[in-house]
Image (tube, rainbow over all chains, first blue to last red; front, side):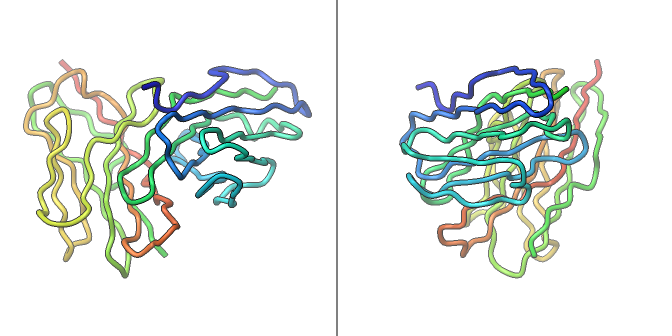
Length: 112
Length: 116
């Protein structure tokens, strides 16, 4: 099993550009999450989904949009990138119930 | 509101020495507790979890943690560390009656540095 796959792994954007980060899981998990990780700030939840076709805001949703049209995919979009969005982005998934999360290997995004 | 405090941001130790990484949480309800490890330039990996039952939980790579409800703590321990244990360690908590809200609350992490 591949688990949770994130693409791309690295990206450099110019301020104002848009992009989409893709997260794909092959474990039939119900829940999926997008986090950003910044030095000294731990993991901060951007958006999450408890099932296909549903999404909800986390603690830092501004400037991001998400979609979950298929159960196995969770897309994170940046409409107009800003330098403050320079970060490492992690996707995670979990089954219904309390089993812990499975994380992807991350996307390192730099906005210049 | 729930919160998680990892009491040490950095813990330097020598190889083969014991280590304890401290985690305290605040919650007025029952909780589920987790420890994750993040090796450099990688994603997070589940080390161990406490859901119910025995308060001493054993995980991968020789780590264990003890749930102490009265002290609201979930400290991570290893009796003898290796160079390969050098990583960032995160403590996380989820409310036991969260229903469909399976969000974890995360600590800020503890950087474990194992020196030869």
